[in-house]
Length: 115
Image 1 (cartoon, one colour):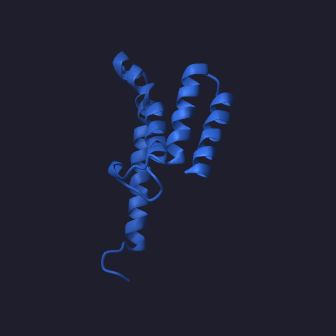
Image 2 (cartoon, helix red, strand yellow):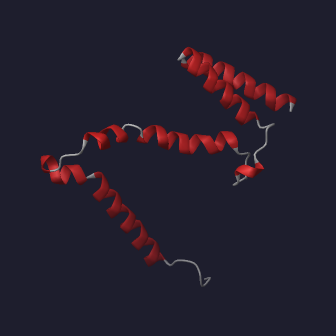
């Protein structure tokens, strides 16, 4: 066994700690109930959390090529970038998913084929 690897006990301890932190943060309002008044500003900000999470997952997939970790290595010939950009514009313009998917995938396929 390597000196820098974790043993079974350390891994179990980490998993248990992460489970405890997750339980406490998600059950905070259940445990405290109506005794805690959340400010309206916080409630409005929480509404943007799912969008921020999706952007954080999807943006690197669209902008960076596979296996790259830095924005300086971005490739303008990436089909992900152009398909995503077209998909964004089409959805912004039409607010419909079907044209967004069709045109985004069409541009993705064309750029992938020609570049």
